[in-house]
Amino acid sequence: MCNSAYEYAMVNESQQLETNKGTLFGAYNAVTGYFQNVRTYKDSESKLKSLLYGGVGKMRAQKAFNLCMKLEEYAVYITPYSRFPGHASHGPFAPPFLFVTIYISV
Image (cartoon, rainbow, N blue to C red; front, side, top):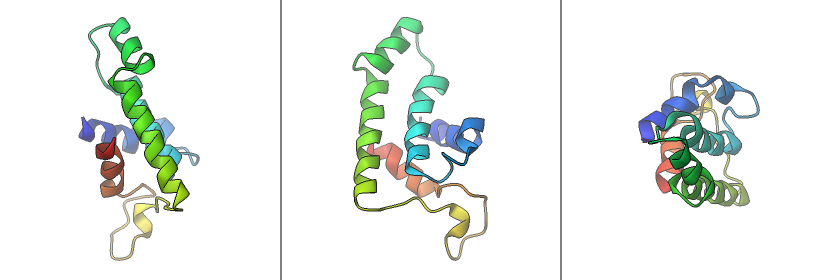
């Protein structure tokens, strides 16, 4: 699941917008986007329950939101991977370890 969410964050067109790329909102949006657009559900009713009525999708989205709010509170910002000293440039993406930390903490 984590690899699929990370892949969604790195390749989905909406995730590459300047408003998302390398931001806390982008990390949150990647988690919610995974549950809304990538994860498979048994049927549309199961998807609706998961996302809106206290299922896994809703719980993970809320936890991701809470974590992003905490990170913002402490002024922790996601620096684009290419700007980290000593790392080869891989484009303006959040470093994989940071995305994974956000996602696993959810």
